[in-house]
Amino acid sequence: MANIIAVIWDFDKTLLNGYMQDPIFAHYGVDGAAFWKEVAALPEKYLREQNVKVNPDTIYLNHFIRCAKNGTFPGLNNAMLREFGKELRFYPGIPEIFDKTRDMIASDPSFQEFDIRVEHYIVSTGMTAIIEGTEIRDHVDGVWGCEFIEEETGSGRVISEVGYTIDNTTKTRAIFEINKGANVHPEIDVNAAMAEEDRRVRFRNMIYIADGPSDVPAFSVVHSNGGATFAIYPRSDRRAFTQVEELRKAGRIDMYAEADYREDSQAYMWISGKILEFARRILDGEHDKLKERAGSVPRHLNV
Image (cartoon, rainbow, N blue to C red; front, side):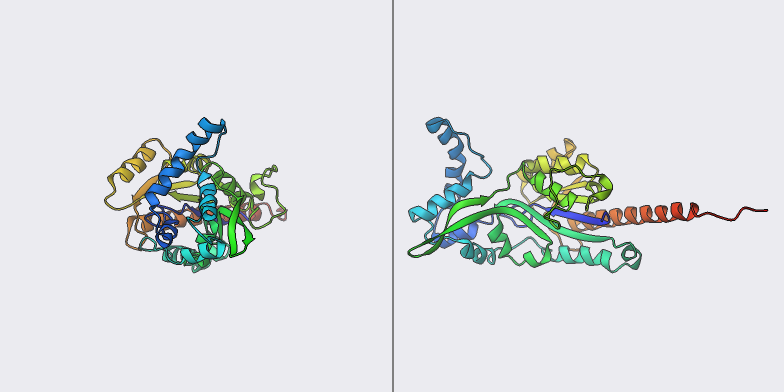
């Protein structure tokens, strides 16, 4: 299947103006800025004290576990994380853009003739359980994020170990899984060689959307393989605007816009326009294949 257009979204600062963990801090009365400052100091602390390197993108998961065990976040478990997800509020136009862009292609008979369709995915360094609790989960086709293992305690289940992680580099693995179809067909080894024509979603049919420099590895994979890249910045945030402009100058992204996904917004028009562009290119390619097949049909010789 090579007629799928995949729109791949980051989460924090891309779909909402903030971090998905903010409801946790509010619930427990914890200063979120202080928590993240502690997290930012951990890589240097462990290197200095134990000569141990840690992943700066995912060490925050260990800190959440520590806080769950020391009483800062008592009783924190995956069920609670899903409940916190219900509290998140997204940028205007989310989740509507997922359904509208999908329906835009699905409602056109010319695209349906060749089963051209749109899929939306979230690839985040955040917590999968929180994303699963949000209103957008039913509007996307798949989620990659970080996951916790729980243990049973005298007062109930609590997060105790890190089960799965996505960092800013391994986001590219998720993109390759989408590319090869490993997310739909688990029997596929994402590291195995696969011919381009056998891949479920070709890179040139991908759009990657995120908010800043931490997504450069994912931007690079999609952009260098012919896909489209798009960045978002919050309204009136000059620092964020400068960051995405630098990404554009460096050739990491094709375009950027203010974080507003309503139909009359620049972001909506660019994303929907790029999806249409990809769909028409795929359609033209299918028509060319038909012409080639028709031209190769044996004909009677003129006598």
